[in-house]
Every structure is written in C-alpha cells, then in structure tokens.
Length: 346
Image (cartoon, helix red, strand yellow):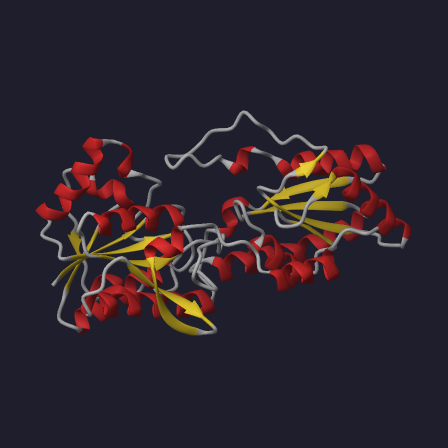
C-alpha cells in the first residue's frame, strides 16, 4: 500500500514525532510512505510526494517543526484547487492519506473522505480545541512554555512591583491560558469561557495590591473579549477565514488600561510562536507516537474518515466529522479551578 502523509495548519511540537511513528509503523507492516510537502498546498503543485523511509525519520523524534513543512491552505475554496488535489492524489497513486492537523486540516480531510479518498487524521493543535479527544499533539509543550514563562516573569515582576500581562494562544478557547496559567501560578487568568469586563479586571488589580501583593501576573487568552476594551479590529484573516489573533493586541491593550486606571506599572508579554517552537515535551512525543501508530493501524484495517483520539488515557477512534463539528471549550472542572485559584475578586 502507498500511504501519503502531510502536516497542515500551524506548526506544533510533536509533528515530527507523529511523522516518525507513521513511517515506522507503516514500514513494519510492509507499506510505502510518501511525504507531502507543505500541507494541502503540496497537492496543488507539480511536485510529487517524496518517499520516506525509516532512515529519513530516524533522528527527528525530539525535533520541533515538521520535516514536511506546513501551510494554511484550503483547497475546497475553488473548483480548480478541488480538482487539483484529487488529481494529484491519483497521479501519485496513493492508496491512503494520513493528515496530521487541527480543525481546518481535518475538515479538508473529511471532505476528501466524502469524495472517496481513503484518509485518516491525527489530532494536532496547540489550542487543544478539537472535539472527541481529551488532548492533541502540541498542547503539552505549549502549556509548559507558558508555565515556564510565568516562573521567569514572576521574578522580574517582583523586582519592580509590576503587573505583567502575558498573552497566550488558544484561539476561541481557554485551554492553553488555563492550563499554563494554573501550572505557572498566575494571579488572574482571563479566558473566553468566563465573561469579564474591564471594570472587573481593574477592581481585581486594586484589591490584590491592597491585600499586599507586590507583583501580579495576568494570563489572557488571545481571543478573550473584555467588555469595555476594544481590541484592534483592522486585522488580517487566513485562508480559512480566521482572524489573525496576534494582531488583536489584547495583551497590550489590557496592560495599558490597567496602568492608566490603577496607577500600577504594567507590562505585557506576547508569548506567540514560542508556544509552537522548539523541542516537544516527553508527553507530546509519546502522544504523537501513539496517535501516529494508531493512524496507520486504522489505514491497515481499511478505515477512512476517522482519527485516533485520547479518552481517559486510552486511544480510541472517532469520526473526522464529529471531531471538527464544533470547537471544544474548556471543561467545566477547569473553569471552576480558574475561578478558585486565578479568578476575579469581588
């Protein structure tokens, strides 16, 4: 069997570990693997996928990024690109595809499944917002970066008696901000799942300083809406129509509002692509290996339109349609933890 593998969407730590697992498991079963460059964009050009053997993936387990490259490309948008992708798959004589990605990449994978292409997904997103799975590749490394940053920023905030606002990734959910913020001991965590106003934030800052807190660390999710504050609106969108959240500058706007309305010195730090880069944690390496291994087993079993997911620590199977149907919000138990340990003060 000839199996194509690609990585799509934003890069995340653990992609190479997943590629490695796909290649090693497929070769162990006697199949050939072909790497598709730059996500779905790699099926729109003239270049054919390149063979991937065990030798090519031998040293990539701990590497960040992706040896295949990635892109935010939606081939469903135009008839020409739809035909192009399907034609490239036929020309490459691929019997199946393994698509490693998040909501958008797996949405395209589900469309291909509906067109009759055998395709299996692998859940990857630092935002951890895919339905049907508890955790995705890249999430653990991202929250580790947030927690480590808070450890470091606490010392400088303490030295200057400052408020430091740390902007974390997460798109429309608070998984990264909540997990990273709780692990790093943030004093206040602002996430989309908990409504908040600028007055709430100002009141909490004043109360904390009155209680004797010499420094205050605030973690804000990049897409949070703070009533009374207007984030930047003149922002770009990607190929899937998503707002470029890094251009909203919510962290800078919040820090400025805190400083102007409380008199406290405030600084802002945007962690940005630090959360995507670098070597994956041990957990992300293991998670990627489990998912990649299971994906090939699903291909071997003749399955299509599905992906391996993690539930209660076990690897199970879900449909691509269910995985991308809706954005998975932060669970109620973690919302309550945020309220208790890093919530707004009355």
